Length: 111
Length: 113
Image 1 (cartoon, helix red, strand yellow):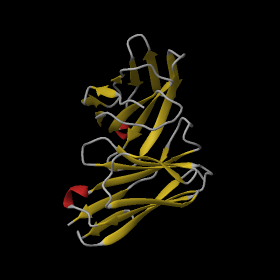
Image 2: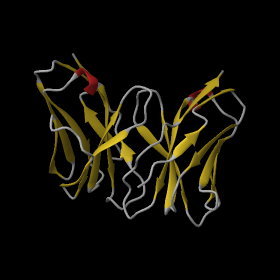
Image 3: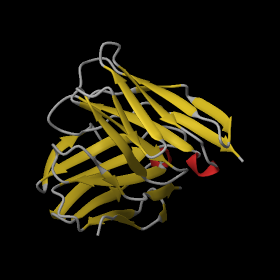
Image 4: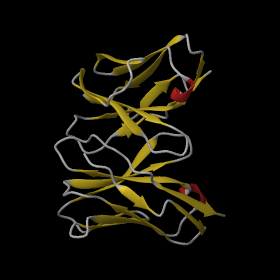
């Protein structure tokens, strides 16, 4: 599978604000996933969006996918200090889920 | 049980030591993974096991030796490591290699002196 590239590399916001991070990839995909990693911990799967979907919601998370632009965005609404983490996207192209991560977006939510 | 466990949580070893990292899951998953993560960097895929067989070795040096003795257990044997091998080692599993979601353990933080 290919590597996604997240943007921005770092994002700092106040609690209650929305956070938007983006992911770009190079070739067509089957699906794209977002993972979160709290400092020094394992990754947690957040949400998966398939190539035939344009938008998906899960709680305070909203993910969009634009296959024509080969990009995805993750919106976290009403952010909390506990959302402070690194966020990685994983675009999957083949019939396996071997993931190669980009640098990620480091989100800091200030109380 | 929807958890991947890793032991030990922390490990300090000398360059001449031999140690092993252990990963366990009881979700019936048949694909298991090792990742290496240096500070402030993304996880890098090291090895993939599918049905207890090694499917991918991402050109990892032979001082890292993976082993999958059964479908629930994944080991990473370490020998003659270098200080630059100090990192967080993450294990993950998925239902099968074609499954969409991986479940990660909390990692083992390794320091090589």
